Image (tube, rainbow, N blue to C red; front, top):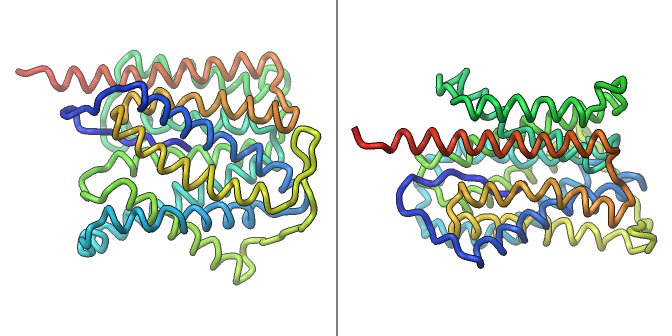
Amino acid sequence: MATMTHDAPVAVPPRSATGITVALLSAVTFALSGALASPLLDHGWSAGAVVLVRIGLGALVVLPFGLVALRGRWDLLWRSLPTVVLYGLLAVAGAQFCYFSAVQHLDVGPALLIEYTAPAAVVIWLWLRHHQRPGRLTIAGAAVAGLGLLFVLDVFAGFGLHAGGVAWALAAMVGAAAYFVISADDTTGLPPITLAAGGLVVGGLVLGALGAVGLLPMRAERTSVSYGGADVAWWVPLVLLGLVTASFAYVAGIAAARLLGSRLASFVALSEVVAGVLWAWALLGELPGPLQLVGGLLVLVGVVGVKLGEKSAVEVQQIPL
């Protein structure tokens, strides 16, 4: 998932070509995770084992940067510990485990499209929990995304997707929505990269503990896997999952948010869905059907509408009285 924090309305970073390039790299590398993990899952790896390796390697790489950004303010980390733990449980371990569980039953494209209805879920949460009533454009965007989701699920053709896979993808959507909500909370003063590092560490420890006591299956098979017709050693996709789709993707996403401002970076991050479909096509030969492609387009249009409505609401709030 790409980093989608919300900056303050002032001091927006320059919207440079470099920032857009970095944001695209973040989205493309995040999107690669499903296509890399799917053959491992098909060859006997459990979702828990794949997620643990990905998060564990990512934590090892990102943690030093997070500690440097903290600059010795350990009291700040201690005060923010509940937020870090919740982030690790829901936004890191929960979202990734549920997503990889979904791709055991669904193609990567539909799983990503279902997960990326999360921005609409965030709008509904803020409306119900904090009474932040969305504007008409936001509501229209959420409605379009909902219609697109029906097409993605093949509801009009008799619900052709695996029900368990859909349930896992919806659970991943909840984790992604929690990621957006927690990331948008800048009241703790915790640097974003420190929050990311702490979340990866917590997520890895929780998954490891669940695996150690037998509550989370940790199956691994040292057999080669195939991508695009070529066989590779089992450890190659694991290294790429940890170094590229976790550590690099998180760091690139944070760098993009600082260069562009999180609002523009979040628009660019929507390309993760398209990139995920393309990766699945190139590496796995998976391509959604025509109605699912139409549904995916509607989901993307709807999410853009939600984000535009959110931006308009912020601009209205900034008008001097």
